[in-house]
Amino acid sequence: MKPEVDNDICMHCGACVGTCPVNAIFLKEVSVEISDDCAECGLCVKACPVAALKGGI
Amino acid sequence: MLVSEGDVLEYDVVVVGGGPTGSTTARFAARQGADVLVLEKRQEIGSPVRCGEGVSLTWLDELEIDDYKKWTSQKVVGARLYSPAGNTLEITEKMAGDEVGVVCERDIFDKEMANLAAREGADFMVKTSALGLIKDDGMIKGVKARSMGKNFEIHSDIVVGADGFESQVGRWAGLYGAISPNDIMTCFQYRMADIEFDSRYTHFFLGSTAPGGYVWVFPKGEGIANVGLGIQVSRLDGSKTPKDYLDEFISSRKEFEDGEAIDMVAGAVSVAPPAEKTTTDGLILVGDAARVVDPMTGGGIVNGLKQAKIAGEVIGECIEEGRFDDEFLQLYEKRWRDRLENKLWRNYMAKEKAMTLDDKTFDKVIDALSDLGLEKMSVGAILEGVYERYPELIKEFEDML
Ligand SMILES: Cc1cc2nc3c(=O)[nH]c(=O)nc-3n(C[C@H](O)[C@H](O)[C@H](O)COP(=O)(O)OP(=O)(O)OC[C@H]3O[C@@H](n4cnc5c(N)ncnc54)[C@H](O)[C@@H]3O)c2cc1C
Ligand code: SF4
Ligand code: SF4
Image (cartoon, rainbow over all chains, first blue to last red; front, side, top):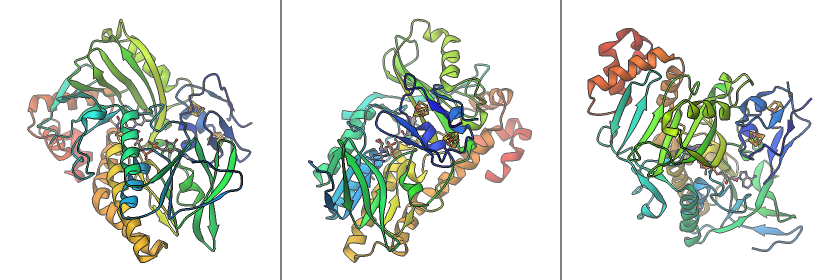
């Protein structure tokens, strides 16, 4: 399962975007989109400074 | 600027990202006569702030900036480093060769960089995202973009990727792939009001309070500061976030007893070696997108600005010669690497070593250095100083002496 973004927590900071090894995350102005390219590595989940991402492992 | 669905705009240069490096590239390119458009996806340049706001002042002449006061929040006279056991080292302006600098107002700073570009004739579009590159026969010839719900295209001779840590442009162009989790600092920061730190200094806390990184306290005036930390992504196991680490640090120290957080900032910086390649046919990368953040400090503003000036000047030459191919763009690679690369690599290696130190070693190192009363705070001087007291600590660093 690709990670899910909790928009109540997300700060739209882009830490997950730059961390993703397969470029599956895109940060729009106020939303984070994860595409089906996600390789489920879980790195973005760890990189998120505020635990707004769940799953992905 | 108004655009309608399906419009095609023509420019010499399109810059993706209205941060300080995007604006500065635009400024110097426009000065050489280029027609430049800067796209910024956020509705306001510089905001929300995603930065600790610490910046030196040694680069003002090079970047032709005459008034730093308008974006300065607090001038500092030195830095204090704290080891885990509380040993401290004070680095004064004199020791650091004027690199101590100021804590700035990043939103005002970024807007000023944009203002300087606009005054040279650059155009800006905010609330406008680049969505992809337009390629024609192997050359990059512009970007697809979206502004206020309208899809349109900008055709250009050269595209500049100044889109920061999250850079898509560099990835779309195939210039690089993933960054190692060892080389990413993920950060969290509060603006804390009503705290007790000496506001004439920046403060740095080393060791396992921020694994692989450090905690910073950068004053924004009396009793108020940016209090943040960066942690190496590879040191996080998912059980604790950077925010958790910072909350723990703050609740462990009496200086914050009455403190109130009045804002929150999250983000990440690369502390990687500089990108191996920052050009391709019709495209260049600058700033965080080119990975020129200082790997030792995580500071990226100054290196990015120096690189951006070179980028703007080279673009001027491209236009003069009518050449936008990768071969011609090696001018850019060469000039910025001559200017910045040695120090980036040296600090990358120093960071790699510093990452391996445990809390006890940080205690010893800070202790040894403060005893020495160093005159000058260069990496070389630090290593030699520690070598005198703890030769065994320095064995690994010997190649850098
Ligand atoms: C928490 C934190 C603390 C920091 N503290 C310091 C510090 O104290 N001192 C220091 O020197 N550096 C610090 N840095 C690093 C510093 O912020 C960066 O090095 C600096 O902002 C780099 O400038 P830039 O112009 O390359 O990128 P950015 O400032 O990141 O600008 C990139 C811009 O591009 C825009 N963008 C991205 N994608 C698109 C797109 N597709 N279309 C249109 N626009 C787009 C973004 O919205 C953004 O505005 C810190 C970073 C973080 C995260
Ligand atoms: S889980 Fe891994 S591959 Fe999937 S979006 Fe996150 S970082 Fe990218
Ligand atoms: S790292 Fe976390 S807070 Fe930042 S944009 Fe990604 S999901 Fe949101």
